[in-house]
Image (cartoon, rainbow, N blue to C red; front, side, top):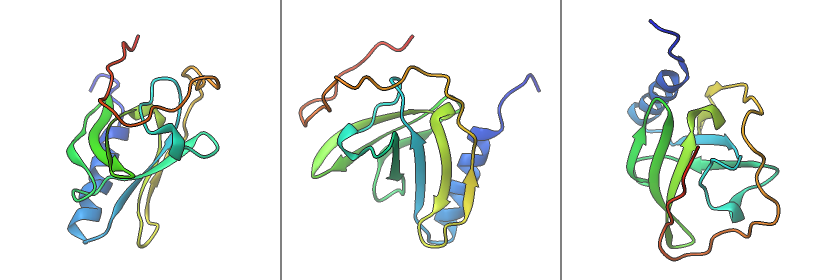
Length: 127
């Protein structure tokens, strides 16, 4: 194998385990400029998201990113999380799961950028 990270595979395994056991998979994410989440729910540079089938739409647990749509305060939002920013995936009910070291590789979140409010999602070029 050519240096492929095990992290996305482990995330998918814990997601499947939670689903099979009837538990709720939660994702802990360290935010940076590449992460697309509702900033109004970010605390101390981190957000915890329910990624269960009932809470998300069109969930894709890819090798490079996690993408889905979800409602926050009744407003649909498009979520994009680089795999490198995932700090953990765990069961809400038991707390069991896996946690990862997150390298501070990305650009920090701009402090002066206001959080997006409702409306249609915007596409951003990620370099």
